[in-house]
Image (cartoon, rainbow, N blue to C red; front, side, top):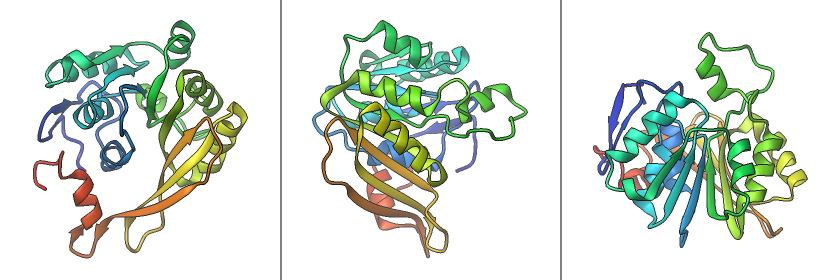
Length: 237
């Protein structure tokens, strides 16, 4: 997906000129694929442009709290929410998830969604905000897992999108926090490429693990499953 200054979806638009991390195909798939069935309260950690919060608002009749550390990105997420049909159901908090957790320990969410900063000990980006958005210097996996554990409702689900290379480290952090993997949804960019992303779902109870896989691009373009998931959002599907 090209990095334009804005994207128009079927029911909302996302402007992103003030955000370090732009709208991506992986993020769109994540927002369309995670299980939001029956959810009334959703937390989006690291909201960026507000894309995932907006997709969640379209899919579920829920209130969404969106937490974003970077003030410029938080302001853009707020503006995107205000221009959407669901402005009364999305609240943006311009702060760290660590602070949000400390100040909102009484809250519980049916779903928590996060496309977190995931690189550790990688070369810093020339853009400090992009580095912040992609690297876990300011939000370790352990801190993220602990925050999700504290804020997730008893029967809730915590969904994350990660590179396959970071899967084991993140699962270890969740196990340490007391969260257990319930679904592993692998994402393959093309039929000829290896799985590159994982959509992982965690809960408070240890149950059986469901596994599935999707390929984004087939021989003639997007695969049928990808089209099915993204058709409610993409203008040209």
